[in-house]
Image (cartoon, rainbow, N blue to C red; front, side, top):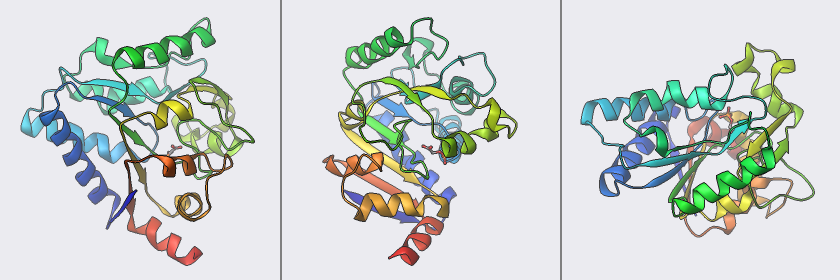
Length: 246
Ligand code: PGA
């Protein structure tokens, strides 16, 4: 596992954006898994900027997002599908058929999870998985629990997770769905390479637990330490806050 620390969130986004563009240029049919949340916002603006500037060709790229709220789909405000459309997809020439997303409005959610897993397998698996981390140590919506699920599934969201997602719903926690569909731990760990982004002091305890606490279902991101090719990218506020915990 490699850990890198950048002076600011913007520097981290610039470094990762440059890396992703380099990957797309060298591997035009790369399969990427993408996160939502506050953390990747700077990354997506950087990718949009670099794409404009350098005419990056995304036409062969495939993407799969990690998760989506149950009850929400592409047209809905607050959906992760909408988030990705405005932050990234509107700014690059990804083909509509190459955008993989869980549909939180699918009539049969179990079938939807199976469809998604099959779509990932049909694409040949994930080459590079980009992740954020929750303050509670979650990745995707794999929340801390006595047992984690390997495959794509419907998850019940912890209250802190719903609270941190309230900003997509005008700050109203009550409007944040209680359930979501998410890739499971096996799908994440089967990716060829994983990049985890962590920014801000609110993530210090979770990242510290990942790096020093051993592998535990109470910190789902700790399972990433089993993977042979993980890069963790932090900003200084997170690294500084972590240093005070040691
Ligand atoms: P955040 O969420 O980027 O909004 O902090 C990260 C996550 O929950 O994975």
